[in-house]
Length: 254
Image (cartoon, rainbow, N blue to C red):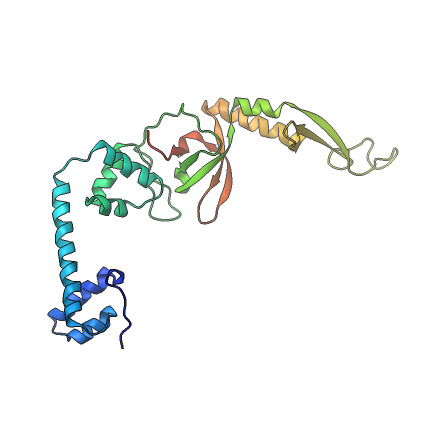
């Protein structure tokens, strides 16, 4: 006996196949078994009737939507829905418009277009964004080069570099140095280490801190803008440092 399932759980593809089977003179019992329902000709007819009515209604709505301008509210919802991860095809189905029309709205609104391939960068050449807008920690962004959403972990700007300079040194002995030994004087990383302790309780090796601050400030001097440390929310989430501002895009439209 065929397993009974609710009509709304029957995939559309199976219903289309059922209609084709009936056209090719398959028995109604065979078609019911294909759909996973008990043999019931009235129910079979109702499933097909409802499906055709739904198709006709969707066709009517699509024709109507084709000749109706999109309101600003709909455009805003399209943009925000896409920026939050919804697929173009799903958005198109909701408004009974084509995926191409959804894409046109996104392109006209400077929205990065996600690549279909996992390892391909997003399409961002069409975007003109205000690079003077600075992101903040915990802001959600879209990272074009990785074709993924990301969260801002740290803003590498002048204020950040200055904060790193506000601390104090702490010397730690590693290996006792002996006068007259192989080393004429104590050696950094061998006999001792110098740490730089910040007010928030974090600490750096002093030399690492100096190199980090230099890179932050060199990038600001070279590009005229801050860079970012981000958490990339891909299949294999990871942290990425010194991401240029131009490769990050806001995920909520204004």
